Image 1 (cartoon, rainbow, N blue to C red):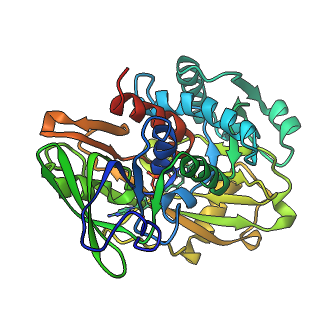
Image 2 (tube, rainbow, N blue to C red):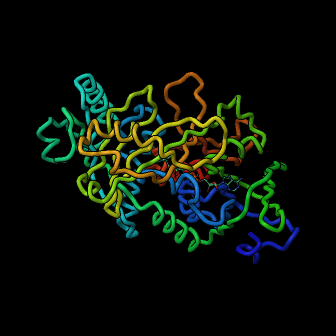
Image 3 (tube, protein in one colour):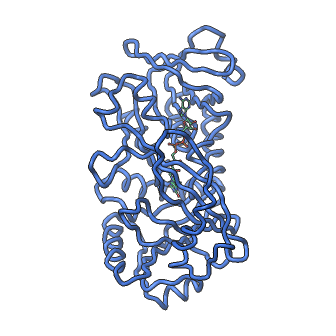
Length: 388
Ligand SMILES: Cc1cc2nc3c(=O)[nH]c(=O)nc-3n(C[C@H](O)[C@H](O)[C@H](O)COP(=O)(O)OP(=O)(O)OC[C@H]3O[C@@H](n4cnc5c(N)ncnc54)[C@H](O)[C@@H]3O)c2cc1C
């Protein structure tokens, strides 16, 4: 950090900023860009050597429609609004993206009811253009895909998340935001109406005094909240790590699928089910799967022995796929809120005056569809930080 903000910090001297954002993933960057129009004193601190090195670069890059989540949830509101904002932002800022459309495919009679429920939930959520398709319509659209019925969402798409983050940084920096990489938040102390945030880089520990602290620390966001003094058990902020691995399809088979193809989700299996996701380079990935990690270790290895299971899952809707067609790719980790007896957990975006910490805004459990929702989440945070 000394290198990057050296004009601002003299070793050992406390530096003051209006807003300190912890984390340079897509959420921290979107928030920084949004708030930079209203404050000229914003620092983003990031423990890694650059932006987007954790969950924001380890996902499916899907712009979700908003089909699955309960109507009255923050996830739905942020996803539906975020999708619109993201397409608009991509158009205006020349960010590679594609409205590929998506099919959720039932391969057995027993799954037809689930397709109908998803259709009615998605309509309630305001997802546009949805249509239920029969076997022939599916074949016509995607000759390599088998299904007896499917839900088609034409608004779902894919985005180049790296370019999105790069553009957000460019805009934020143009508005005066300071990016401090290699800067890990180690401790936070509240002193009257100021937060003294101790940040460690390779050489030293610096204290940044901030009026507002915005916790966008992804997989570590519960740890940051606890550092300030929040009782994360009582507030139900505790995270558990849920890994998602991907396999990649060889080029010969990849070109045969144009849209995102998802199975019907089975609640007991967790997640949306192993799906096929085309990328902007003409490739095709399968995944992610769903595995809770016992320890909070960021293990991004991909287990080759899962190949059989991946192939069998996908074969149900893409019969031409063979084990020899797929090879290991990347993995990501979902910051899942602990299951406190509820089937669904919503995003937590909360200003903490009620817990005795005015000016602290926590964003916790920002799992999928966090990339889609990023710009709407940033707007939401702006409304909290700068109420009209
Ligand atoms: C497998 C998988 C697939 C997904 N697919 C999709 C999808 O297709 N579409 C979609 O919309 N969403 C998807 N998501 C969700 C999406 O990727 C996330 O919601 C989003 O990237 C979260 O961004 P973030 O900025 O909150 O977290 P992150 O990208 O993890 O950023 C948090 C940052 O905080 C930093 N940090 C942590 N602690 C400290 C500290 N003490 N000091 C300084 N910095 C710190 C970290 O280094 C990190 O860079 C997926 C997620 C996963 C895991």
